[in-house]
Length: 179
Image (cartoon, rainbow, N blue to C red; front, side, top):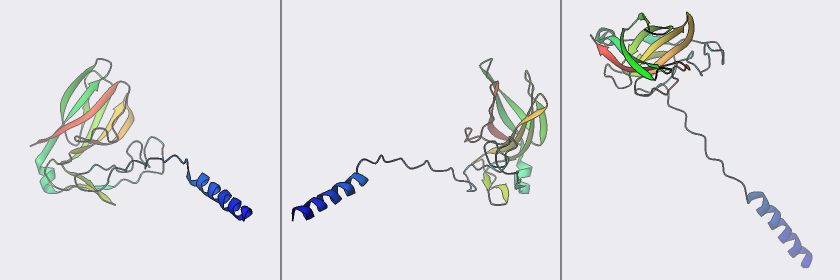
């Protein structure tokens, strides 16, 4: 009887030792939703995303940008804020959509593409879910000294989603400007 009691006690100790002091890891943070109206999402080619022109991941497959005539006819330009980090100052510039803009007092040139007042991304296209400025975004390319250093989207309400990063400059979309 002593051997059975000893065997049961040993099995109990082994069982409890295996489940005892395990450190619980917190669950990973949720990924931001993509492709839902009103939520930010990034197309391939954005920094840090697969297919980025910065060398990470697979080759880029650009999604088609689809804009209604109403959106095309409403928005003529965007207000972009440039942060001059060394000077500790910021300046807002109004830049026409689908144009090129040389940023004063810098070696930056911005190629401003389409503005989407309510950015939404599907499996094969990027569009605006409405003409209301619910999730404003602008497609932008940034050149520094003639070399492309950024190619992606800036979001007015989500400036930390894949932002333009530079030790000297910062960029932020402030808003779209109607015609």
